[in-house]
Amino acid sequence: MRKQLLFITDGIFPHSVGGMQRHSALLLEALLANDSLDIIVVHPHQKNVFPADSGIKEISIPFSFDGNYLKKCWEYSKLTYEIIKSYPDALVYAQGLCVLKGLPKIGKRVIVNPHGLEPFQGLDFMDKLKTLPLRWMERYQFKHVAKVISLGGKLTTILKKEVNNIKNIVVIPNAVNPGPAPQRKFTQEKLSLLFVGRFAYNKGINILMDAVLQLNNEGYLNRLHFNVVGKGPMFDQYIKEYNFSNVTFHGFADDDKLASLYQENDLFVFPTLFEGMPTVVLEAMATGMPIVVTDTGATAELVGSDNGFLIETGNVRALKWAIQRYYQLKPEEKIELSEQSYKKVIEKFTWRQVAKLHLDLFDNFKA
Image 1: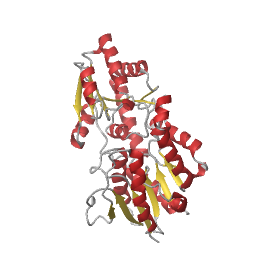
Image 2: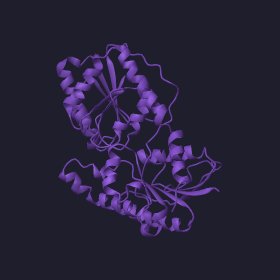
Image 3: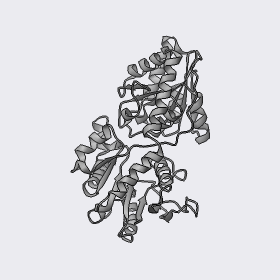
Image 4: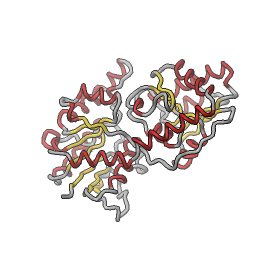
């Protein structure tokens, strides 16, 4: 018997930009490969985003999330609640805070994917104070829904403290669509390093730039070049403040440009302060890049000593050491890290595998 899946999201890439929006687009695309589901997608875009012959039914709720985010989430959820009521037999998959209204009545058939759990990863008292309303709202979700998806790692540890019944936690990672096995060569004396992320405080760009300054002062100015990709609220400030000759700020890069940068650079560095399971790290691994990333969220599921360096959050010295250590490796050692990055993606983090995990969850779901 075919199941009816009501998939509710706050946006679908490329019509909305963000990790959760990209996740929605790619997961739906992967689920379509299976014919056991009738998929109804609820989104805030003005027009349909999937081809007419895709097999997906779309319900558009033209809506803007500009303004107070929590207030907007609640208003959007009031609209999605009316749709959920009109599909009484559907299993509901909620991205983030898209389903809130009426949860005590409908929660037994709701699966929520909270993604990065950023409100629970506050760095200091002020961070925790600012995110208190978000934590309250997510806890309200966790209390009433049937299943909560964890991306793994430290995120599962957080959820075990927040979800009443740990049996309601289901670990399903993020994913990418990898290409053919890369053939990288690590012979050049000058190395290129790549960072991709939003220019916001939590991405640790200031940590990276402090490490660049120290490396330059220690003789690496002409040995390392850093390509920094992304835009955001701190972009203008950072490009003025960190005016290093061996740093190129690229701004926004579309998918084609980003694909080229993954191929052209030798090492991916991502000193983020808190995270879920970052897509950019998976994308870099899928092109065979060795990785330096902080141990936060689910990054330990992706990176270890076999394919890079997992470092302490907010530690400039640890980041500098990892870059220096990588620079000193022999070409064959760098190739081994590269091959292991790609192997990990192929073994665990493709959309085909992640879609299968979702389908198993849907098949075994009992309201």
